[in-house]
Length: 269
Picture 1 (cartoon, helix red, strand yellow):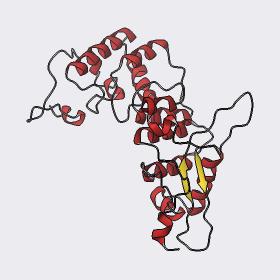
Picture 2 (tube, helix red, strand yellow; picture 1 turned 90 degrees about the horizontal axis):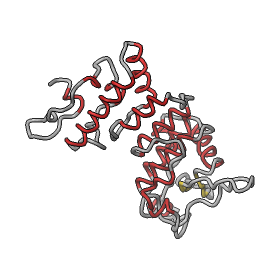
Picture 3 (cartoon, helix red, strand yellow; picture 1 turned 120 degrees about the horizontal axis):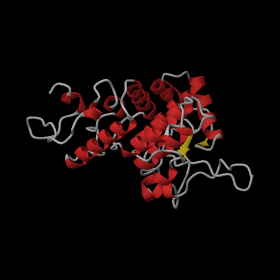
Picture 4 (cartoon, one colour; picture 1 turned 120 degrees about the vertical axis):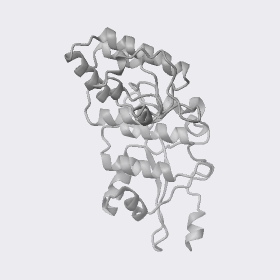
């Protein structure tokens, strides 16, 4: 069997791949599973990036994954077993022999425990699954406790949970965090809380910072920044620059072409 013939094998017939949103949701679920170490999460990211959305084809060699994740081949194989054992990955083993006869993989979601019965890790995802169809844009896949936002934010929150970050924030901060405008990209809740707490020690009140967040949220809504990477990271908003004290009533800073300035450019204006 040559490499082209090996690539055309369909180890999971009748199944298409996860769409981009579902893959991000899958990664969020992996990140929130505290039993999965960081090395396995890196392998999960590599697999999610390589999966063919239309055909579901996913058969990189262990060596390829090792190069992309900076892990040893032994470490990659261990990570693949962990993902498989926890129900996040289906594996169709190769017949061995030729070097190009690599195993094929399929991203899947663990089945919930039913009345104390063991979790079935082998059922995977079929064509009628909401994961495949993109129903509700994969939002049903996010583990409970995630504070909405984009899939990337969900992954980051899951990573914080894996690191043992606190989840019992004060009610005043939770109210402020909920009012903060959403953004794409990273927006660490823990780092925002640390800066928020530092401003409290500096003499500011939760009420003044909440009021500043609400002004900023209205500003972002009016300038159509909400939900984009032009929204300031919360850790910077509550940082030493004390942006929560600004009026946020003037028009948005703009570039020479009339578009909104990126966050890094606003520092220069």
